[in-house]
Picture 1 (cartoon, rainbow, N blue to C red):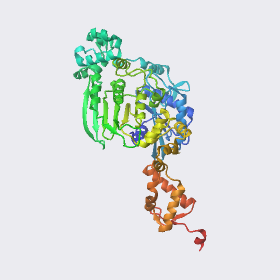
Picture 2 (picture 1 turned 45 degrees about the vertical axis):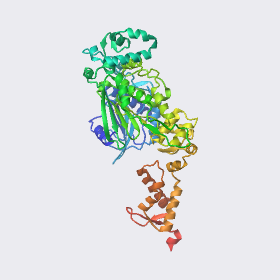
Picture 3 (picture 1 turned 135 degrees about the vertical axis):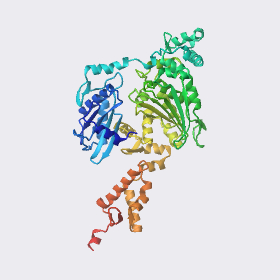
Picture 4 (picture 1 turned 90 degrees about the horizontal axis):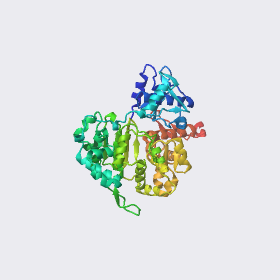
Length: 557
């Protein structure tokens, strides 16, 4: 989680704006076309500077003084829609961070660096920065970004010091068996190949020379130093329900066999469904074997080995499993990959990916992520959670149900597409929805409530038999709470702030956090005293004592 105060202080320390930082006053609005130009420029410059992102900060004037901005969430979502509509390749802000300061609210917009080989344009034009000035992207900068796809693939690099002795004979034998399974027509021929011929045929070596890929997948554990500063390591960690580490183990190359070793280490317990009149089986594995294999192989295939990080697998006794690899997520978004269901045109480690296809570790149809989503969907478990922040990809799988009856009925609704379920999953996890997503869910009568506190609508809640849960999420109308307060005062004569809190706090909408609940109570009491004039404070501002208001005639008496 980013420390907003530290980040803002860091940016304000700059003597002047630079190629990847821009401050704008934007007190009440910001021109959408100008915003798009800055987005293009800052994204391209972040790529050229080798940075993961750039920053556009609203609410700061040219003198780098905080003046505050009143740009609303609605405006911000409109800006995002414009960015998504007119940028190519289509992209958007990584994050938008709101921060309160003594001088007003500041919005920090985090802009992703342009992907390798793809400079970002706005309405067909490419922009860049000359110091703090907005300019057209220079031709040499445009070519610099475009040529990034032509740069050397790390996974195909020759390891000059390596020989066949640095490879594991057991791993080579296992790779042969996998290659036969992938190419059954060559089964008899493969048995006649020498190790050197097989490695060339499987594209692990290039004309007999050992590659980084060969060391990763088939290398002896002690051969890891040959590919430094890259790290051929997978760490498994077990955590208890309080997120405290209980156990761990490191696994090294050869990765072609390590995947099975890590999978075996994961305590894939049986999950027992609640007994009763359901269609569920009595028990299932918490984590489908395909998910474990696919997620781990994806980490190996897409890790950015130039960053020197390791792959981490965290298993929690609280019922979740997380996989993390270093390196930026190349597609625009996980949702786009799932919904479009098509392979990416480029890969970070193209040579490695091709070899893993040959060894039957992954396939080329690009549907692995979608299949993992569907596995969770049909088990009625929460969908995978992806975190793409901080130059890493982390995916979390949940090995338990949140509510068996709700999940069962929700999954049975025939009109729900996977896209619908992805959005409803966000609602259930109280994640922020875009205006487009809100409109889609409202049109299908799947959600109710006010932004940002949405909940599953009565259409779903009624079908699932979760009416009590629905009421807890939605709460009551304000008039209901006002009536409760008036009845309390009629019976007891007066009430302190704490007594009013105790009266209605627990029945406020469950989707509200503690702070929002306090704000709602304050607004209700304010409306009763200032607008309705049904109650009045005869105590102090700090220690109020609320009484029923006297009528006008009573006051005159």
